[in-house]
Image (tube, rainbow, N blue to C red):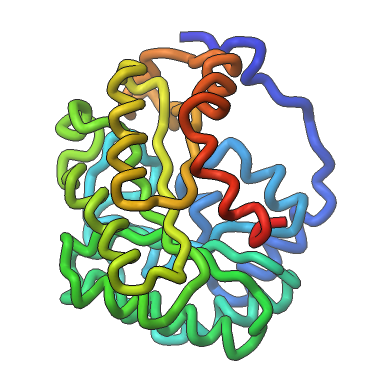
Length: 268
């Protein structure tokens, strides 16, 4: 399916791109920007920012939309929390995002490692807002508590798609478990903002998307992002639809306005 005109972007300046790559190499770090082949990584690197991906670059799950390598992960790098903090400081980030591969091979799913990363960033750059994009930890409450106890500013967990498509898109995940995780964060610490994201164009209907919005609102999710799915390759889940920007505007204005206003002061 050819991409429509509205998805074509102009070439942007690469100033800052090399700086980010040099810092990542210096501190032996991965980014989801590179590993997931994000189409926006050039723009982000040019602005001297990136989403750090901890716990290696091999995922234990097989989501069909994702480009991150799948298989048996390497051992956890104990130096990674300090190195992430050094990189955040070197880039002068006011807001940093930390995500990870899913590590179902670890007893706590890597939650303790997330906690260490948050702690090290707070030590080195205490004024940096910290957002973590976490896996579901198989629904384990104690693992999640390790992250909430570290008190990041935002805990993000993406539902990614509607329940009907989980067997195709996220076969090792569970929709209700993902929604409930966001609710548990609020129960553990109501001062932490929660965030989620969903992709459009995987074959969902508008009614299904709106039901997902309602589910997230029921657990007091503060912030929601909606994006167009772009298949990393022909081997991944196909793009069923390119959703017109006008439809995104309608969803934003009529249905998810509640998801944005609370975070504007933090992100400005």
